[in-house]
Image (cartoon, rainbow, N blue to C red; front, side, top):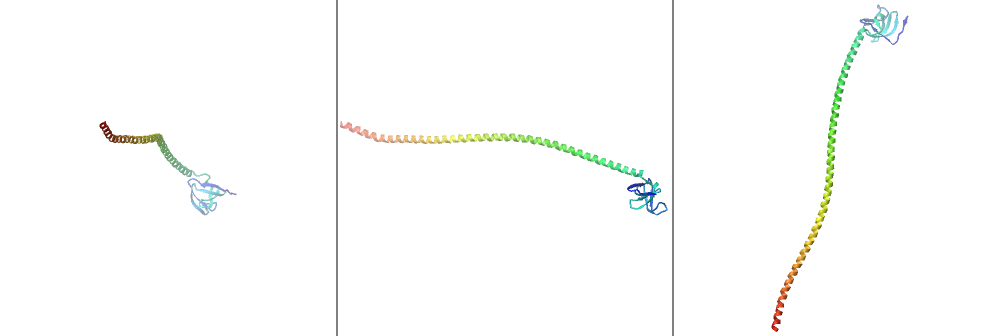
Length: 208
């Protein structure tokens, strides 16, 4: 009796190189030779100590059960484990390198943050100084505006006083001119009147 088995996998047993044959006998023609241990074979059928399999190359044939194993052979497992161990070691090394890079990046970022904080503190101090200078400048401008207003007011007062002084000076000069002119006229009149008066007195005296 034969039993059909689907989706099952067996492996060539440890340290073996076997052939897959057309029938359940070593006298039948080999469809594929030299399958090394650990080669996976797809089970197609089982019968009387033989198993019909399909090779990775797609050939189908029979092999004695004592050449087959349901588990991977130890050598193949060892190779796989060594490969996995090597891959794990490489992954660990890569992870350590990545960790070192991340640590370096973190340190660099921390230094950058500290530098930025220092620059921010310096800029804040500069801003405070600028604000103080701006306040002083506003105070100076306000004081200058007030001083300019006072100066303008004083200038206007000075101009008014100068105008009044000029008017007074002109009035004084006119007054002195009038006084001088009056004095001259009086002098002229006196020069004209006194001689006539003397002649008149003289004439009066001779008549008497």
